[in-house]
Image (cartoon, rainbow, N blue to C red):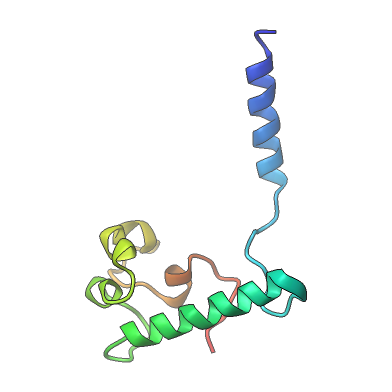
Length: 99
């Protein structure tokens, strides 16, 4: 059974490749939708609180006021490397639009 770990690894990779996004839609019914709407509301509040100059993007210093972990790992979240986090970079996906 030396091939079992390899088979298991291949199944995990195949399953992950076919997986859909785990981020629920805001209009989704049920518990997942409720949790998504709550997370969205909290993210908007944090983003708006951190955006001291109201330019719609967050510097590392602004992020540090609401999310120290993200500030400490800023480069990881700043996907386009412009030195700021957009809304999408702040929440980690582009599934929820900020209104």
